[in-house]
Image (tube, rainbow, N blue to C red):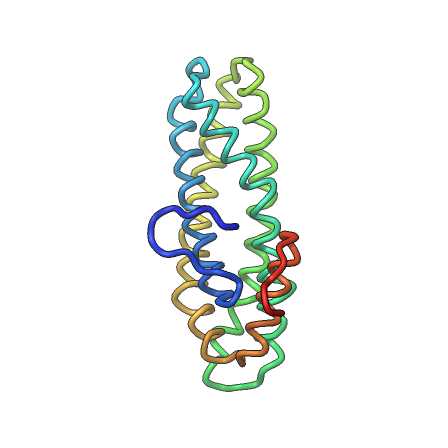
Length: 184
């Protein structure tokens, strides 16, 4: 069951809506990382601990499923449909996949430094700077990535894909989360 963070929550019957809801969670947890980055040169507080642990858990467990939803379910179906009206949206998919891999490498660095910080150890000045730079880079990457998906790719997918294709995508997304979709 998705976590509701403001606004409406979509279910697996609306795959692009569900992915947009994931983007809201990504933005929220990026905000947590940015807040920790501001104070990472100070001793760990309980508030920072909770925020960092939640963000690391989310990006470690949920973000890979989100990427798989797009790369294994949504994007391949979009690529199979040849319609000149949607060529610009389909042309952006390769770059989005590259950004997923780039974000994964940045998340690995945040995970490494965040784990050190959570252990109660003081980060060196170099590690503090690195943590801040990587979090800033992630935030910048995600801002543009989410914008392209929500303004170009998802609207094209909603128009391009049949109800049956959208239902199949939703079923695959649910299976990644071990959720049974009623009526299917």
